[in-house]
Amino acid sequence: MKANTNLTQEVINKRFQQAEEMSSIWENSPKEVQAYLSGCIVTAVALAGQKDGTKKAG
Image (tube, rainbow, N blue to C red; front, top):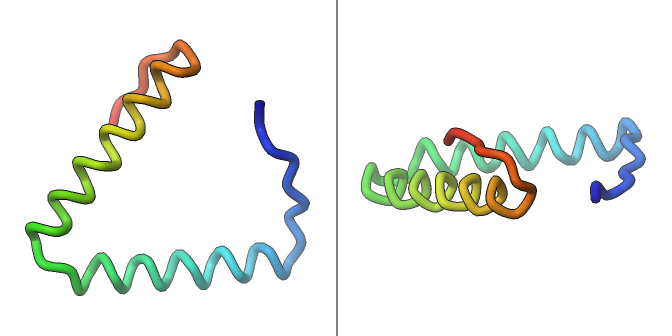
C-alpha cells in the first residue's frame, strides 16, 4: 500500500534540498562509510523485495 502524497511545489523543493544535502554528506564521507551505507541500501532493497514478493536488484 502506497502513501498518498500531495506533491506541491513546496514539497518538491524541500525534497530536492534534502537530496542535495544527502549528496553532500555522501561525497564528504570516507570510502569505508560509503561502502557500509551501500550495503545497508542493498539489504533494504532485498528486504523490500521479499515483502512485496518481487525480486529487486540493488
